[in-house]
Length: 511
Image (cartoon, rainbow, N blue to C red; front, side):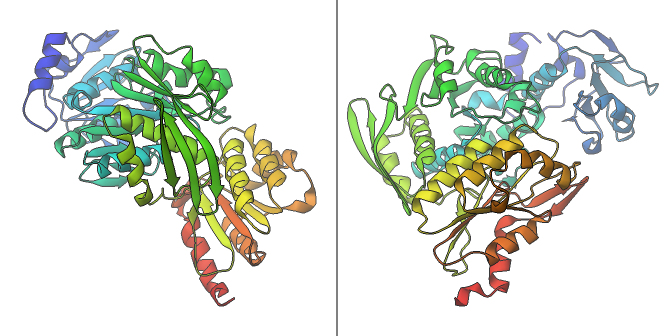
C-alpha cells in the first residue's frame, strides 16, 4: 500500500476497524505469490485458529514447537476468508491465500492498517529490561493519571485500556491484540500508552512499526537464554528497540548507566534521539545520592539539571530507586513537572505481586514477589536482609521448559543470602519437578540449608511452620500470577491467597 492510501485509511472517522478488501490491505507489501480472489472483505485478524470468526484473515505463524500451517484447515472450517502463510497452499477450499517470507512483519503492518494506526494518535512509551518493567510501567501510568493525563498500559500484570482492564496473557501480546487495545485506548480518550516490551515481543516483531516517543532500558541479566542463544544476542535484541530495527527510532532514549549493558547501549543510541541517563553514577542525568534504605521505604536526593529534589518513596530497596528514576525521567520528558511528580509519590499503592505483603497479624513478615532470575532474587533478598532483625527464609522454584542454565544460579543466590530455603515447583510445564530439582542442586552451597518439596502449597506451609517472631519469609517466582502450569494443565494457584489461607488456618494471628 502506498503512503497516500495508508494515510487515507488513517483519516477515516469511524472508530471501528474497517472491512476493506484483502488486496487493499496487502497493497505495497511484497508477496511471494497470491492464489484466489483478493477482493474478499476482512472482518477480523487471527493468529490462533481457535479464535477465528467468520470473515477472519488467518495468519499461519511458524512457532518454536509447531507451525500454524497445521491449523489452516481448522481456521477455514471456522470461517476464515483468507490465509497468510510462509508456504504455498495445500488445501482445496478455494479461498484466497497469500504466501510471504516475512509473515510477522506483514502481520504487524496489516494490524496497524486494520485498526487505522492508533499508535500515531498516542504518545507511545516502551519499557524494556530483564527486571523492573512492571514496576516502572505502573509508576509511569500512576504519575500520568495523578497529573491529569489519561493513559493506558499493556504489561505483565494487566492490559488497561483507559476504560476497560483485562488480566494480561503475556507481557507483550501479538500485534493484532496490541493494535486492537491501542485502538480502544484512543477511543477511550487516552493520550499516552505505556508498554512493557519483552525481548520475545521485539524478536517476534510484535511491536514492529510502533513509533515510540520514549523507549527506556532498565537492565539486562541472564534470562530467556532458552530462547536467545546467548547474552550477546539477548542484548542485541533489546538494543534494536532503540536503533530503528523495529521500524522507527524513539524520539527519546532513557537508559540506566549503572548497568553495564546500559552503558554499552548508550554508544548505540542514534544521534537524532534525545538521550536521558539515570542511575547512581556521577555521569547520570537523573542521579540518586544520599540513599537511606529503610524497612518502610526509602529516601534519597534526586539531582537533575543542577537542581536537588528530596524524595521520600514508599518503595523498598535500591533497585526500586532505579525503577523510580526511570519513571520520573520518562514522565518529565512527557511534560510533567518533576517536583509535582515527587509530591504524588506517597500515594502510589505498589504493584501486585511485587514485594506484596501478606499480613494476617502474624509476628513475622511474609512477602510475595515475582523475582524469577538470580539477579532479581539477589536484589530482593539483599534488600530484605538489611531490614530483617532475625532470620531470612525463602520459598522459590525454577520454571520448566525455560533456561536451564539459570537454575543453579538461582539456587546459589538464594542459599547465599538466606538462613534456610524451600525449593519447590514454580510453573513446571512439561518438565517433571524432579528433573528441574536436579538442575537446581548444582547450585546448592550446603545441603542442610535447603529442602526440596515438589508441592508448592506444601512448601509454603512448611516455611510458615518454621517462621519465628522477627523472621521474614519471601515467597518468590510467581508474584501476581493466579495459576500454575503443570503437565499441560493450567491450575488455580495464587501465592498471596495460599499464604493468607494457611496463615489463618494455622491461627498464627493469636501468637
